View 1 (spheres, rainbow, N blue to C red):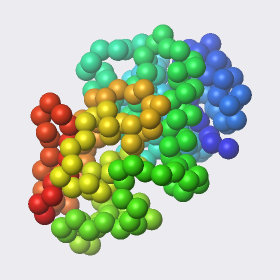
View 2 (view 1 turned 180 degrees about the horizontal axis):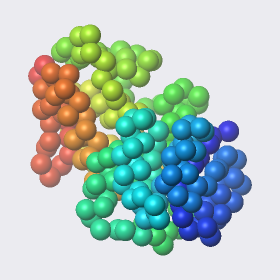
View 3 (view 1 turned 90 degrees about the horizontal axis):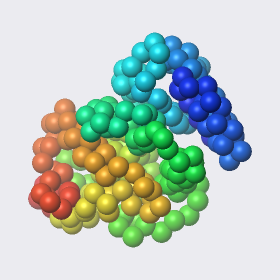
Length: 238
């Protein structure tokens, strides 16, 4: 059973989310403050975090930042009434996987949670799925970079990149098709699932982090190229 931690100070919303998610066979815990939520996170190590930005004791952006320092892989869904573009960009650049504004449809939120876990189960081999663009190979070699699908590991020489789940999926998809241009919509569909209705600009934030990690490993950041007005591609020149 997947564990979900909700950090939400509005008791009614917290109880509603717990009731709906528990009825879908998730194990849901609700924390009303950042302090309690961080403590619960360290103790429980949930499979997903749903995080409100407007908490009484600490800004949710800081909570997101603290959790990303501890864990670069746990999926984080930001749930908030703050719908300014700067808040979206900041949250996504810190590593949030989705951004849902209040008021929200509980059915939509549940669908996004279900879609995320369904896609993750497919990618980790718990169910069988045929990929239209991802290579069937278990290992890709791109210049000095080795992409190991079985271990979900990317290495450059002796350096192993600290890559999140979504960052790995994006790199593997692009590197499976060097030279092919993918729009943000195509990347969302292939990595998050065809029924995902997320925020397209989150792709830009993931690409920005990928490039930063490439640079730290002394890989040229422009191996993932921006095609202005279209999307992204993995270079076919190593």
